[in-house]
Image (cartoon, rainbow, N blue to C red; front, side, top):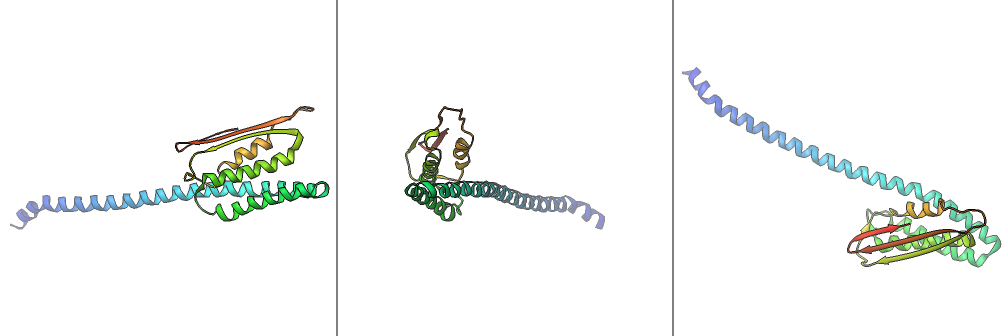
Length: 181
């Protein structure tokens, strides 16, 4: 009788064990997926932070050096550059601590950066910029576009006795951003 009851309850016991194992497996899989998604997000944030950290010192020292040179020759122009520089610092210190900033804030930062570069290069470089932003609600990772604009000035082709040029066109239309340098 005991053996008969044991074998007759075996399918029910297997169903219960299988269901319990399945539920446990699903719970563990869900936890692993959540951890994986969190790690991916943290990795992305770390990459953006690394990019920001690479930009700041290089850019800051170049601008400070240029202000120092301007103070010896043209104090009024140095004052203008210093005001633009303070706007750049303000943006980096107060706005860039968030995961996203409004695109129009990022564009204002780029415009200040381009204005400083125009003053820095003066007659050696022609700069043309077109900024067409439709909405003020679009958001972007802070300092995401800066390396592209900064590298345009860093690697501009300047032949002897010829003027170099940088053309920038930034257009946002229907939530799509196009940047041509």
